[in-house]
Length: 245
Ligand SMILES: [Zn+2]
Image (cartoon, rainbow, N blue to C red; front, side, top):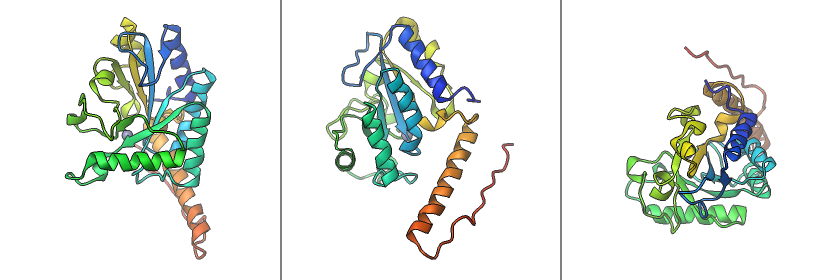
């Protein structure tokens, strides 16, 4: 259960880390042996859902790195609603970097060239340089891999993934331990905290968050279809969810 995952809970978590002496830094300036905190968000299901966390961070005077996909089947960074969300992230003082999905390409594709094209596209949208990459669903060979991608560092390089503490909310829970119980926090050394905004809507279980997302998307697709195809009549689709077993 992740009923505690809400924007307020995230704000409380950050406040607790700051109270322990942590300073929020970006990937470029964080030092492994200091009480430095990197706030990373992998935006897997749409930048609009990142805004409550981004606002909570700004209210605490800290900034984060939001990694967005340009190859997602779930959202389009070129669409007006996504561009508006990215602009708001930047306006709040955050960074927008590339979340790269290797599975979007054939195994023999030139990954570096593909990532460079994605960085160019993302930079064209935001008007800001992309300085960092994170991998979406990285294969084991990418973990602790020191190689750069498109000339940029990535979040699973040894400096960020093993020299620093690493804590993630993957699948909507702290399955490998909560941040405040992390060994790096006990030692007062650097921590890379990865969160996925979809889990922090405050909707209860991860499944409830996904159902809200799916309802939102279907309503949005219905409206978009009506706006683009004159023969479509919106409001005729009803969505029901079967209860979890
Ligand atoms: Zn991802």
